[in-house]
Image 1 (tube, rainbow, N blue to C red):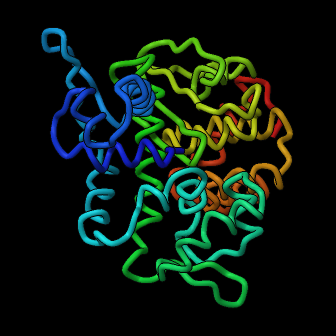
Image 2: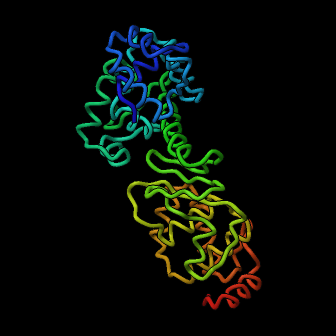
Image 3: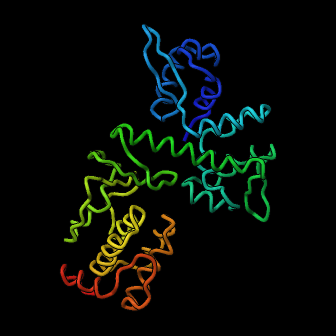
Amino acid sequence: MYTEAELQALEALQEASTVSGLADRLDRSRSYVSELVARMESKGLVHTSREGKQKQINRSDARAIELFDKFVQQYTHIPFPELLGGATLRILFHLQSPATTTQLAEQANVHRSTVHRSLSPLENRGILYKSDGEYTLNDEFEGLSMLAREFAHVRHRQRVEDHAESFTILWDSLDEFLVQTRVEIESEAFHLTGPELFQQYDLPLMARQRRYYLYSESIENISPAELCCHMLVIDDGTRSQSYCLLLISETGIERDVVFTLAEKYDIVEQVSNLFEYLDTEGESRSGRLPRWEEFRDLAEDYEVKV
């Protein structure tokens, strides 16, 4: 997520500085710090501006940096840039509750040895402990998991800002996020989803001048199951749920697949309600689900068998 050098520079940059000034504080060459600042700016940690011939460096006002400062200032004896660099923040992202080495390795997409190597220095300093095979953050350091999440959010925002000035991130994980914007984003990692994608299944759904994208570097396209989940995250109103019901009926989505994704997007209850509604032909209807007669008429309009 972020390197030790980037976090060290962030710690040293307590006020606006030039490249030369920051190089002096870090005791590194000007060329090295210039490249370092460029990487930090691309990751949303700082922003730069020109004042004459000098490049002025300012920290981002992201909440992640405020949380980082809080730990650095409260525990001056702990070298947080050294401890949190590399894969450590990726792993801490998933340490909101006790977890085993295997669980953390799978969730952070790293090797088990990387988990051990990253967390051992934190364990040695009493930041976390291991009990019954599970890592757990000590009470006073529980906020480190939130810090990791906020740093990931900074990274996500920077990725969108490269393409759009105005946007809203609706959901995010360590390496993926769902974003709403009004502009078209042409980038391989941004996958069109939401209302506009329903047209591929002959289920036209107006997007109201908004576009939705899933940022992911690990998939090639949006599956019907994922589209359904995205729609419920975007809007779980009657209209949206009705079209999700049509999509499920039309494409024969496997339930296990949908529920696995529902856990990922934290919408298990909504998805469970959809399938129960279909199984009982509307007799079990909760939340904003339509009356069965209305849904059946809608399905007939689109020639979808329910």
